Picture 1 (cartoon, rainbow, N blue to C red):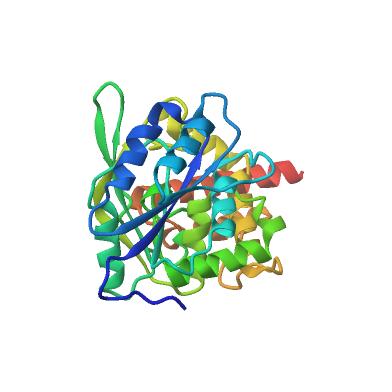
Picture 2: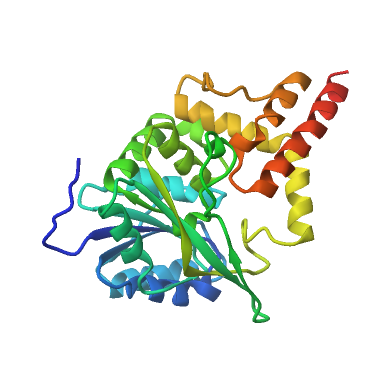
Length: 312
């Protein structure tokens, strides 16, 4: 296990997944490379892009010795699989901590050092935080993800945006080993941040969610997930749940966590009407925010009817 040398600045690997990000990469990378009180190494994986992102990143790597572009043979088709490729490919043995980065945000200069100090000075292996979303029209909004963790929240939501995640060496190495062992199963996963949080919680790595924000979370038309605010985002989430995709993703995550595809004995994920009813009754254990618990209960109730109708 890697241990931090108390006499030097922490070594931090930043994993950056890129796809057609030329409009925002310069600002994002500048905010990464100017992080205070830590030594940064930036690893970039680029899905084939049509806007010059590949050339820009190649030039960046030539100009900065701390930047490495990770090669691969084919398109990975999603940000999650891009991040998983980075996790599998990077040698973490020389790093104290590892963080994820999107291609379009702006980090405050103390973002990483605050997370590192929290992990180093406490018994936590994972860190995430609130973010301040901002739009091109000047609108800003705090995205609050720092509610108290519940018994099973990690089966149904992430610990906040993945761009806020910072993890200890021992946690990321355990995740790396699992992703290498379960490569085929992990290719079905759609959310790298949700999976990493679920892995940490399921294997008893402690996770801290910071109520402060050290990141400006850019919102634009090409966000993969984004801030999930407003009526359109709400309706999109409803459709996602009612389609059965959300529960299926929970099952896929548990399959990778358990390797043998046997789901945790502590929770029964639904296949039939009665399963949805039972799950809905445990909603206070399944989401962190109170209104999300009510939302979870309501959707489970609807799904209990839908599942029965679909079966008939």
